[in-house]
Image (spheres, helix red, strand yellow):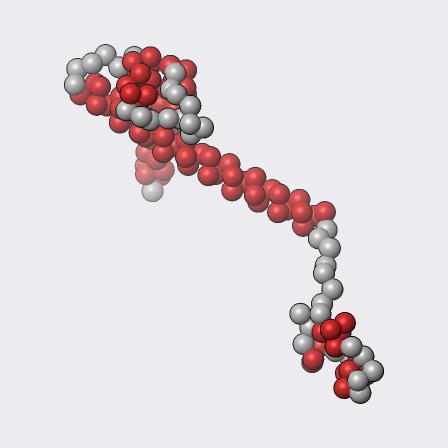
Length: 126
């Protein structure tokens, strides 16, 4: 929004003399966004979305790892199919709300393993 000090001397004189309608002078015009601005906004949104999906997938993978660890601690054989059955019985769902299958368990546990290895590597570098 424009303020009075942003107006030219001529506009100010016309405004105070009553010859100019103030709503047309004081309301700033809407600036069209350039394609570069829109591309940057789209890129930032895409990056934020990818990060959110990654974080959600890692959270679910940790829960699945806990299911696996409980099974191993109780002496059960923790096959991918059995982990999927137990996770479904516990009410856990994938990030998209689906039931677990052996292949989705495999991908989630792989993601969890990579995250743990990455965390250990960054601790060793520090």
